[in-house]
Length: 346
Image (cartoon, rainbow, N blue to C red):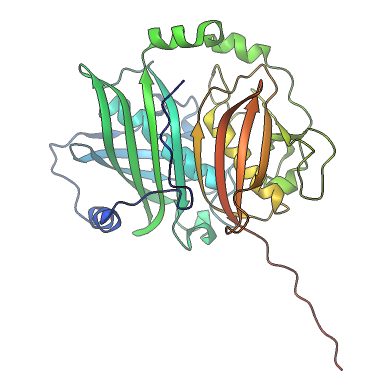
């Protein structure tokens, strides 16, 4: 079991005193001197097979544990929604690519070591979610790494804090923590389940999805929730939804993995929020904890309900498999405006 550190629930991303001002100032400082480590981003460094799915461009060290990374989003994409607002999962994937990039390129973690997600949170800076993604495809990620744990020369755990800017303005913030496992330790940890090709081949067929329009997606194959029973007026079945796992999906399963990817679980949380709002929610942020692997060869139930009775729209989501809660998330979002009413003349 991984050590989990709880986050502040209502904010999603913590901000120590003065942190906002310091990071904004750093965002506008000139890049560090040429002797700082820097380089181009390759698919191998971000654990992607398809070069077209690499969104980071270049990275540069600006302080011993601080970095500036340029990113570029596509003008259009078959999976990520590019309009009318930025797809929150594209933001998450852009951030996720920094984990292996900095581990391998800046902290000399060998390629082949496994990164184990513990927790993650992000939030858009107002009014960022409403800005069309096609309006400005260029982003900069300002990353501070902290609470590093080393065994000898090898980094085995670290936390990251992000300020993402777009057009020179704050666009989003994020925090994460993960651990690093050597191939030998990972094999002992996963046992027979560590054979990714075998485990993916043994995954049962994906069940029929929910209607794609109510999940915020444009294609049925991109829906990761399936009915678990007759839906109620709130959208959930009596117990929730089934997690829909399709190992042939070209984006969510870009390369062989031996467990359900964390990005698929984030998308399930987003789709729960969309379903609760009839497919028209604007996601504002998310905070989550990964407590155990979700396996590919067993059913996983996704449950959702109000985070607290009197909060702004927020949904508490959980992934339950074999009687254990393996992933939890709180998603904040907007609700669609009620239809206008027109009164007739007296």
